[in-house]
Image (cartoon, rainbow, N blue to C red; front, side, top):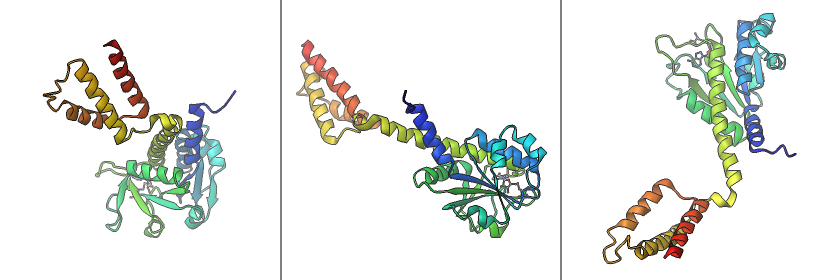
Length: 261
Ligand code: SAH
């Protein structure tokens, strides 16, 4: 039996994208947060965790909070400095609990950033790092200087700081959602092949000629006074867009009507 079911193809495309996304936790203090972040990653299909200069390495508390995402914790890369964690990444995104970090930054929200990240990780097959800062003080300006984009999860301005693992959860979710949309679009394109291309302007002209002829034949249109019916129908069809297989159905219906006459 073939394993190439549409669901399997979708899942493997999705995994291919998500494995290019690395969560980088910079100088995290609480090991429980590392475990909770590992869990947040695993439920969304992310696997690549890097810990930069953590206050201590993952311990029992981390394992307890990971709730069986221990594989992510145990395979986490532990490095001394941030540059080593991102050296193979083409895109580096920093996260900030504050929106007004510096005016020099074009701060993105988590949704559009998830889309940007998924696009890089899938279409360009680029490695992407998302950096999360210290629980107490976030990322330093030197660390932010290594990022191409800065993302802020829209939160209450008067109480804007999420627990770091919750922030990981939201960004991992946005990445999965965007990657899923991309994988679904490419799977749909793959399945539909020629059948579902858009029809050309020529095809549409041919269709409307056919439609007009049938409408006249059945006395729905008076050829001496057609009253903009076809231009109005053209607008209606233009609004929805017609694929080749849909056009074949419409043409088939017109031919069936003609046969009844
Ligand atoms: N007092 C720190 C808060 C750090 S919270 C500060 O003002 O920067 C720890 C980390 O969680 C942050 O560095 C960031 O990586 C992440 N985080 C928390 N809230 C966030 C938010 N609203 N948007 C994006 N990231 C957030």
